[in-house]
Image (cartoon, rainbow, N blue to C red; front, side):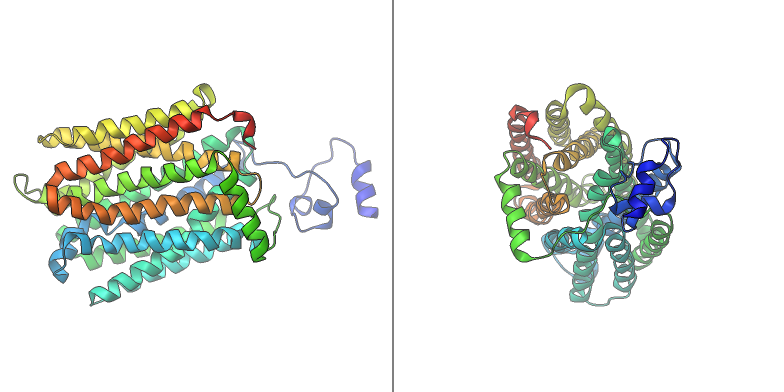
Length: 430
């Protein structure tokens, strides 16, 4: 009580020290308001670099196998649909893990969950590079996805809690741009190194890279200052779960995440099979280099965050999803340069749409925001797993026109969901 009175009597010019900013200290519990991290401050730079590196490592680990699916098909004698399981199992287990890691982070803290998750995923990737059986590959890839759920579920929640509300959308865009560069780097490195060395060396290189990123993340990310532990009691989790599904907007955002990610992953799962076969016969290195289209995400995701402040979330989400639809239709044409243009449009639209939808979750969730983010990402990665594998049957039966039609139907549904979200009263968002 004495500490509280001393704080109340402090002059306005009093500078806040580190102890006062620690939510576990008596000072913080006494009622002193902890400031949010603002753009342009050293802390903002540290958060941006740390979460950028985490997003980069996460997507590099998750998608490094995508451009080498044809190589895995050949080496292990499996079909394209079976080969895609090396990615679909990762995203599927990641989706399941998200149902638990979000609530766990609500109870034990954000940073600790993310640090452990990154180190485990990097370690499993290194082990995966030595596996000699297809079953061993799938087991390691499943464990990688399960580990990475601890990053994906928590990063968005950390940003929504610690960053000043006026720049959360911008900061979320920067984080997702790290995802886009990570996806590009993982695909590019694995595609090129596999062509010159082997897929095992490529996967091991990605694992070492992720390990370095995990160390950097651990050292520079500021500890949470606005985190307040909540109960892990099943009854309370169920109450929050029901609350999220009763909201008029959150279930629509969950569906949007499923459709967006399902469309995006299906394209990149099977474009390699198309370009490596007749009439193109491109090399594995060239197919890997095509992953530079991910650089569009580094521009479109923060740009989308800025545009929401001008036009609103709904119109930007609809526009970005429509851009994806235009892009996938363009890939139906034969010239390689047109296919490349279509891939650019799909990629730019995807990261913009995901940036808007993921940022929208934190605004609508009334409480247990970590659990709400987990439900969105569960749907998001379930789309990757389900649609990514289902696309193999469309490819086998109808070729690229089957893939184009399958993805187009999902994106048309995504545009419809966007219109429903746009009609919701903004006043309901929290």
